[in-house]
Image 1 (cartoon, rainbow, N blue to C red):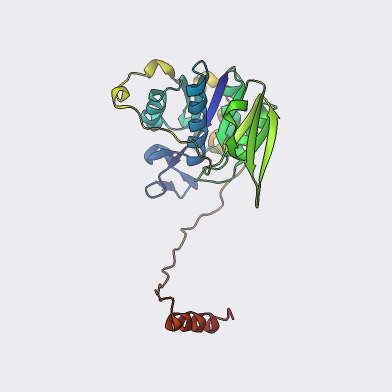
Image 2: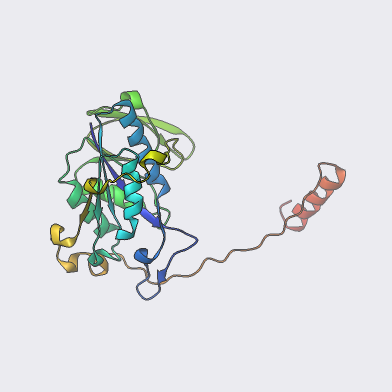
Length: 264
């Protein structure tokens, strides 16, 4: 079986650089982490490879070259290859352009299934997986909580999708794009000590616009169809806390609080 994992690297929310003129995150100058939802997709793919060693997994991402060390560590976990789409021309791309670039590369890769995360913590639009599926004419399921490993084959998959108040089980024909949530149980292991310095450079491929051949007007900020008009810093409120005992005095304190604030 051949699996493609679409991965996004997101800025460390506690330490990133923002460009207030273009209203974009300067990803090349910000520490980058694997998006939690995408890490679950990687974890599931690696689980299947351990069950079926002949499974081939390729990781595809679009990011600055600063993520190369993270990609190398992913390869050291046992993934077969990784493709990094990286070019200064692509900086500031919105979800439309990003999905177009990713789709152009994935289209050339043989696959039985594409895995991704549902959300990204730096935007949370969930657009890219759906747009990739549309571009590649694939069915798509997101908010996947669980995939039945023993029924995951080259022709179909059985998945459990999280709803607002319940879970629903679907069987979907493959190839398709399956997007997992961070609540799923799949995890990435740490790189083994013996593999920390393993040379994986031959399995890492970097593509620029020289290979992809897009008109510069189609990509980056100039090709993006959505623009951020303005931004603001979120204000955090400091809340007062009072601890009471579960006795008559504590009950009276809670009752007085609720009544004075109009809750009762």
